[in-house]
Amino acid sequence: KQEVTQIPAALSVPEGENLVLNCSFTDSAIYNLQWFRQDPGKGLTSLLLIQSSQREQTSGRLNASLDKSSGRSTLYIAASQPGDSATYLCAVSNTNAGKSTFGDGTTLTVKP
Amino acid sequence: SQTIHQWPATLVQPVGSPLSLECTVEGTSNPNLYWYRQAAGRGLQLLFYSVGIGQISSEVPQNLSASRPQDRQFILSSKKLLLSDSGFYLCAWSLRGEQFFGPGTRLTVL
Image (cartoon, rainbow over all chains, first blue to last red; front, side, top):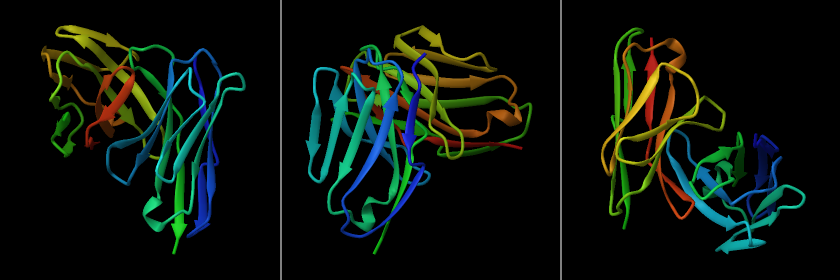
């Protein structure tokens, strides 16, 4: 059974700092890994999708990496802004059916 | 472009009452559809998924059920709600393994 862990559970940084969020998974035979952002009381917004054959994906100030052999992914946020404050969730799929196992998320606070 | 709708946005129901949450997707055909529940401060737990009309798979035993009467409509139901059914319910669809989520329904059972 796939298990996904996100550390730390919460993170507070000053504006402008670069930061890294971590996601680890127990079963390395994944199909893809997806990073989401969730604002309080809202649904999830897809940030980046990494296929199992890829090592990283980039979108603007966000860069996600994947190391299947070690069961790890990182989400790098450059030059953080207060608007980046949200909970970031990592989801791992083991098949192309889209069923995912989610981590509990990292709640990020960026202070002005 | 694709859009996913959920309603109602919030719902307060007494214990023992029935439940019906609806999800519809626009702009795509024959999507895989999912119902997730999120407990406070936690990740998402997959409840049901569907690969086509009338095809429902349940991931966890519970007093909830799901139905897919039309290609782009997914319904979550209960005959009698429990206190433990309170939570944030999210509907999602997927394309080539990438998932997209609706705005969610906040359910409070009193």
